[in-house]
Image 1 (cartoon, rainbow, N blue to C red):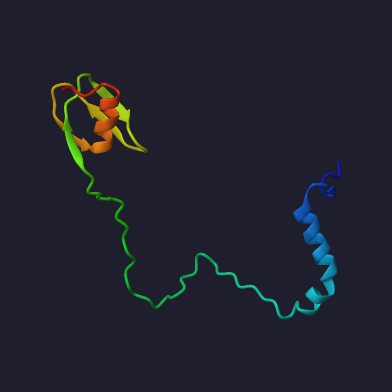
Image 2: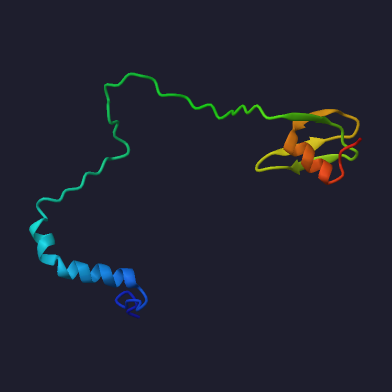
Length: 113
């Protein structure tokens, strides 16, 4: 099968690029000596004489969001509320949680009043 040589008739961008390449072939050949590309190898240190230590990244984020205290009326284990946040709640214990967690559990009827 020679599917590599077949061109999709709906490929407007490809056809336009081929038409422009044909129309400007002489100009491209004339400017070939003017065009250059630079590629930086990823394993080469751009400044080998720079002795400053690299910054360390702290992935801990502290956000001062409003909190509420709650007690649950049912044990909840590995409850995901939000992206990547899992909680364990047990009856009889008081928890301080962000407001959005309190609202979510109250909507589900899990908050003890």
